[in-house]
Each structure stands twice: as C-alpha cells, then as structure tokens.
Image (cartoon, rainbow, N blue to C red; front, side, top):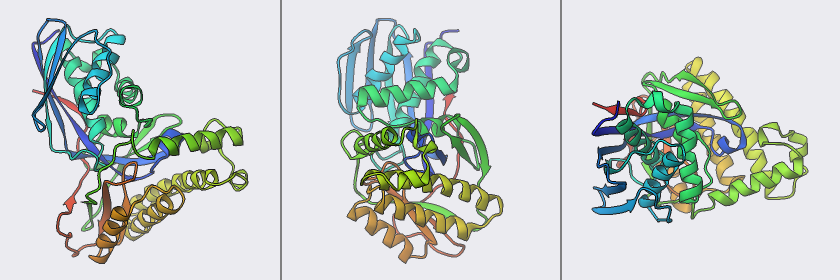
Length: 346
C-alpha cells in the first residue's frame, strides 16, 4: 500500500577480516555497527525528486527522468532514483532528508549506508519493502549505483553487511555463492575499537579501481574466473605487481577461515594475530596503506592493542584494533559492536 511518508536507517559496517576479497569471489567477515545514515522520504507526486543533506546544508532537485551525472552525495541520490526507475520501482516524486553520524571516507562504509537508506526509504513510499525487492537484489542495485553512477568499482561486501547485519554477530559471506552465515562475536572482556587516521579516501579517486583492474588482469593470465579459483603455484609465476595482489587475496581468504575458527573456540589472541597479519598483507602485497594509516596502527599497538589493521578499501580511513581486557582505548578511539541491519523506521 503506498505511503505518503517513509523513513529508513542503514548502518555502516566494520569488516573484521577479508579485505579486497569480495570482488574476487572470496570470503569476508563484516558486521554492521550502530552508526549509520537515516533518510526521510515524503511523497510529492510531481515527477521530481528533491534531496537535502542536512549535515552539509546542501540540496539537489531534479526531474524523475533526469539522468544527468552529478558529483559527491548527489550522485548517490540520482543513481538510486535512476536504478529504481529502471526496475519500475521509483516513486512518482519525493522529497528526501538525509542525515547521519558516519564520517565519510573513514572506511566505515558511509557510501553503502547512504545507498541502502535511500533505496529502502524510496521503496517504503511504495509499501512493504520486502514485497517489492529481495534484499540481495537491493544490494545489487546499490552496487550498481556505486559502480555506474559514483565510479567506484566496489563489490557487494558493504551493502550486504548493511542489509543483513545482526546484533552480536558478524557475517561470514561467501562471494562466490552469496551465502551468508552468522558468526557469534563473543569477545568476553576483549573490545574492538576503531581509530580514525584522519586521512579521507574516495574509492573512485583512490587506487581502489586500479587494484580491481590488476586482479582482473591476473585472472586473465591465470585463465580463471576469479582469484578464488587461482592455484597458488600458478600465482607465483605471475609478473609483479599481479603476483602480490593475487597472493594477498589467497592468503586473506585463509585468514577469514582461521578467524571464524578462532572465534568459535573463543581464541581472541589468535584473532588479534590474524588482524595484524591481514594488515601486513594489505600494506606489503596490496599496497593500500599510507603513512597516516601506519602511524595509527602503531599508536593502537603502542597503547596495548593485541592486533590492528586498516579497514575498508584502504588509502586512508579508520584502523581496527582488538584490545585485551584491562587495556584502555586511546584518545579518539570508538568501541564498535555488531548491530542490527538496515530497516524501515516507524
């Protein structure tokens, strides 16, 4: 049943382990967090869409059939409306108010949270979201917005984490099959914190797209559909830097498996060691770190973190640290816990 008003909240995410594996058909272990993006939608029935980003004090108005490109947050709005229209699911006009508490470019997936919240709110004007589009299809639609409208060739990790998040659980996602399994995140007295490096990134302008292209080239040379299928011995014969990129993906998939096993045995020291190993691989093999990120890792470890690694696509953003019992968080760090996924608000 159509509604005159709808509102949706979509959380950001922290990826515990499994970085740059999603677009390589691999494994990852993200979880949704409490912070996110809220979109309030009001039906206007005038074949136009107006959006206001309250945190920025900026607005954008466009006709429902306008497909002209835009930059920044406007690209997400226009792309979401266009993709819904292509699917025959766009409203007859809407006024949108966008707000939230996720810092952009910090590696907490503010972009996916924005896409998902926009999509759910606009679908909410039409009635029951789950009757209109399955959540896996919402994730794919939002990924098209990121890929085709924003210009970042990301995978599905962030959207799936935001849509399927569960309280007190991480999500083991197999990106070959898109099977999602909940993994209890029982930390006892241990805590996960994120510390911002202060360096902002944007996937479309960073080296993210270049890394994805390198992985695609490695697949061509290996004759496989994805690096998930690559043979370790064959990878050793690749030219650099493709050898290092593929080696990271293969080893990162194993680390996801190992972290899941360690969590089931409540072996938090092993989890911490795997976080640090992931960071070393991202730094040395995938080359996505920066001096600001490295300084943040050093700071977390110096204050007592048992393990730490960059999260998100790299080239800036936040660092995740696992703190043993009794260790205080460094100034500016925020504790993160698995929270519920995206949903319509009453």
